[in-house]
Length: 414
Image (cartoon, rainbow, N blue to C red; front, top):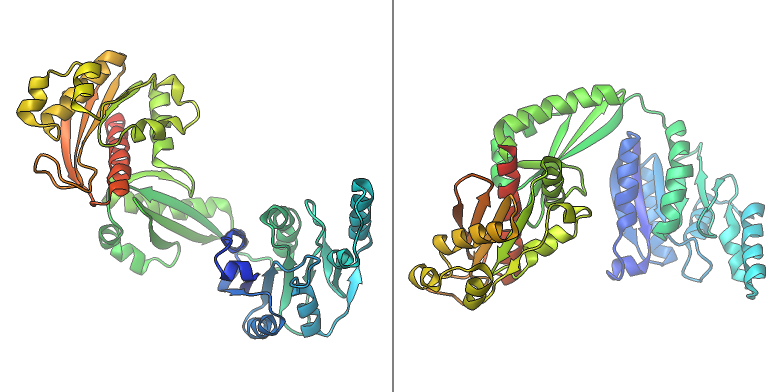
């Protein structure tokens, strides 16, 4: 079962909007065991759209077009597909009634072109639009590839696909083997090193497949298994995950596409009832702001300190000026004092500190990207670690915050 997704819209080509629809539909199709072999974007031009449809129809069993179902002159998708198939457009009575009722209730004048939204290709199965007016449609073609037409706005496309199109496609293209995916998330290891450590697994695995993806500050592995049911898929994925974790498990912090490191850490702290505070210099409150983005964090985070200047370190944290004068602000000792004092003053289980050089200038002979992170964790000895991050100011801060979170995650796990 081979499929192509065609996103229609000049605004996508110009970069004026992000094409999130293709990602959404592709993932849903994968869950059905329907393979997407091609993804195409074409502007609101009938000639180029015809060419895209002609190419797609020759190499696929199903072509999905998204966008171009509205009432304006540049909404050409259904007319173009109808012309390609040699079919007429017919009107969906229920959709037309919805449009007429809306204009009557809002006391607005309905123009003739609004009727176009209620039309669909003769021979198609019309798909109800629960949140808009443009009818979607599925055209089963006995003489070639099938077509699925969906509206462009995500608020209309998503409910139509999930509630109507997906069950229809599942029934039409029933596959004995479905695809199930699991995303493993890693921090503290680069994509190249991660791939090297599991290279033989990537090379030999056909089920599940293993695909690494590098992000700004982390790496993910997407495992995709083909199975007859969820239980079989779970067994396959569990076995592969175990092999991976035997090699790089220390770097793995969570699962899923949206499960962030800070959410994982806060969840662990809440579970263990461990309170936390922070004293920040170069990060200027970024660590605490990141914690504050997670609902429920107030149960374990009473507050903290932003001590950018040396005088603030002394007045807010009671660090003797002689400590900073002797060791420097960018030093192991200063980081330890900041972590210890913040923990003592806020009476928390954990105190973490950040001091260093965000850049672009150097400080005390230390280059931009030099960072000390201190950690006072319950009754364990206070420690500090030295890091050298990329010299770009925003990346130094981001990397510092995430590295601090990952250190806490590891300590909680001990």
